[in-house]
Length: 123
Image 1 (tube, rainbow, N blue to C red):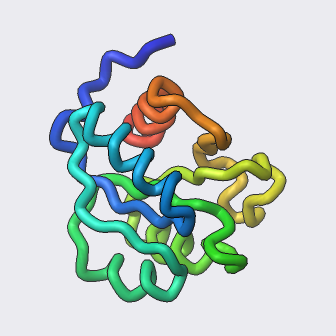
Image 2: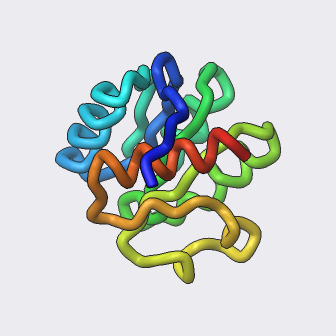
Image 3: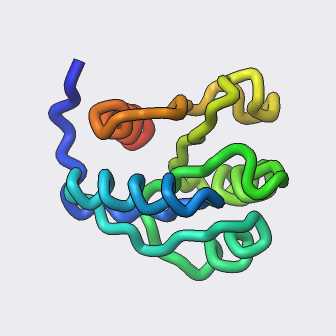
């Protein structure tokens, strides 16, 4: 079911290590009216950038250059910032503390992304 929630102006932080996926995700988000405020391609980079950024939601790849995204997810959860996971490994790849979070399964379409963002932002 297509969501009626407008994503126009939604500020998004992306953590994704694959350049092609990152570029495609940025294009999809912009098509949906979102503003990509920043991206990171490594966990350490995300941990350094996130505290200083202002954003509405984050899209987090679960496995970033062979490193788990858990420290970034924990940081955002502690700040009360909404986020979703993007993974090809399924919900079982998530840390127990975040198993109930919204998961966007790779590969995904723009319509899947919109539904996932709407689910996260409406919580």
